[in-house]
Length: 198
Image (tube, rainbow, N blue to C red; front, side, top):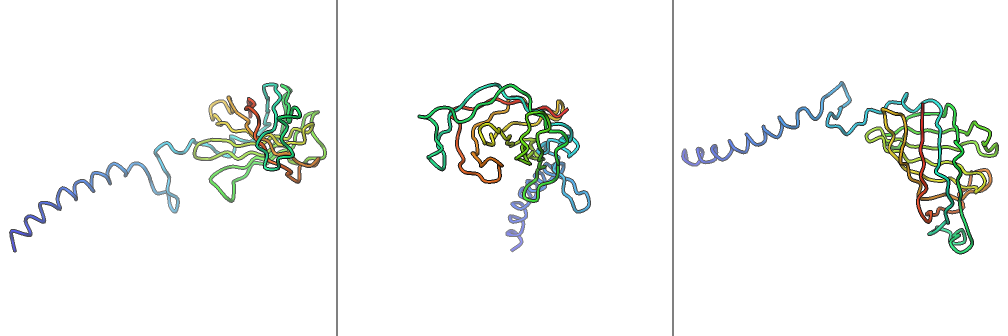
């Protein structure tokens, strides 16, 4: 009986050491700050609400794209011409609302265009969701002449307060006030966009 307990103890020691080693490696990964656990392993990009306040300036590389793969096929424009087109004219959204999302670890940005190109019939011409952990940003911009929200994706850079190399690959076709989505479509090829929040 004694011999069996020594064998069991010898086998248990390496397992205990491995478990202790894993625990020590993971210890610096998190710390406890009251009732909030903070991840220290670089998953948080450091985004705070103040980073997103100010005037959002959106600039497209000019281009025109067909609408394809629409969930309502009557909106496909591959055979009838251009579905959406953008110019290089900067779109300004001064002091949009910035608040925490109820549904995810992100900030929501909503604003109306404040330059001369604003559409009085549409009250929210910019909508964005910026992930607090990665700074990945999904945003859509109202294009009034196409009655469409162009949907884009990019990464918000905390150092420059910019989204460089943003890409727009789809559009939501809406009624003239932007309140009813009539179709969601892919673009025939992506549009390029840059966003600055000085």
